[in-house]
Amino acid sequence: MQEISNVKYLSQRVAGLKPSGIRKFFDIAATMKDVISLGIGEPDFTTPRPIIAAGQRALEAGETHYTSNAGILELRQAVADNLARLYGVRYDPVNEIIITVGVSEALYLAMVALLDPGDEVIIPTPCFVSYQAEVILAGGVPVEIPSKLEDNFQLDPDAIRAAITPRTKVIFIGYPNNPTGAVAERDVLLEVARIAEEHDLIVISDEIYDRLVYDFQHVCFPSLGESVRQRTVLLGGFSKAYAMTGWRLGYAAAPEHLIKGMVRIHQYTIMSAPTIAQIAGIEALKNGEPYVQEMVAEYDRRRRLIVSGLNKLGLTTFEPRGAFYAFPKVAASGMDDETFAEKLLREEGVAVVPGNAFGAGGEGFVRCCYATAYEKIEEALHRMERFMNRYG
Image (cartoon, rainbow, N blue to C red; front, side, top):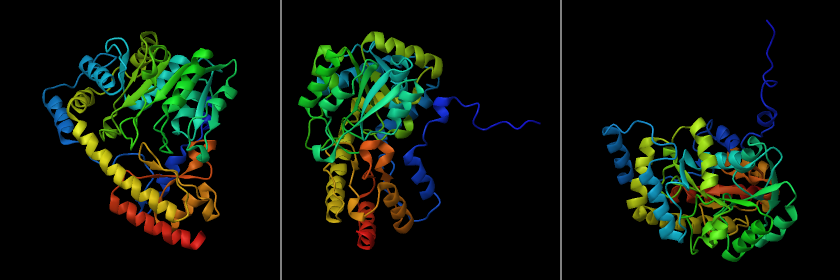
């Protein structure tokens, strides 16, 4: 029989995608014992009990069927109420909100709904690994603009202006930022809004870490004004603030004509987000605030520990003001980020992610996630001290 090629039947878009730089190191770590992971961006907290109980009650009540394509209306209303309460931005829950399978699906829907082949999306880096990949899978072209440590990894409006071409359709922003922990200042976001209006561009704003900020008031991008809201797709979810990663629950909020396009794709690919997760999400938004505050306080304690510890080791670390990541520069080790991460894992059993996984702006850094127990962070820093004593 004729042998079938493993590659030739794949689309060029899929065959050309790089594997996730995050997964490589977890695959290695999975073969080792006594590894402390500062890698995966997932809360170490269990979902709060009342949220779990709401999901259990839903199962027992037989809530195991499809919901409407856009999601349970009560949940969409709760999302709208939450955004109005926190940021003063108002959405119609019937026509301007869709419930998705995590923010990942919301990101996919936004890209596919907006992009024609060859359309360009400006993406500040370092950024989450999915952004460029989703642009490519939608037929678009990601255009990276690196942010810099000396600017506290802030957005650079001048760099955005310089990157605009006749094919530019979207500016993509994600703050608080994964992997740097940077937040976006209001004045900078206002300038991004002006650029989008001048060039008639859409802005996609991934704000999954909006509740995880320290000594800072998060600025929700569409809250900057009605004209800004009208050209923004806001992405959010439940995974980080409510420790609900495995429930796979997110949302997108946008003007009706954009949401209609996203629902059209969603109904043919997903049908609806998990019913039990949606019901649990209603409980999270209505009664989960005390648990959010408890988790934020603990993340803040860990944040101060890891930033201080890394700086003492000579690994220059920008102070993150959002999310749960530290992003130290590894030049003092004499290694590039890929070599540093691999040697640290194999020699000391500490898993971090090389910064180059997050785009060109991340080269020379590693991402350390502090969503793990305080005592484990202390031990990881102790092991990293031994490592730096050998190489630093």
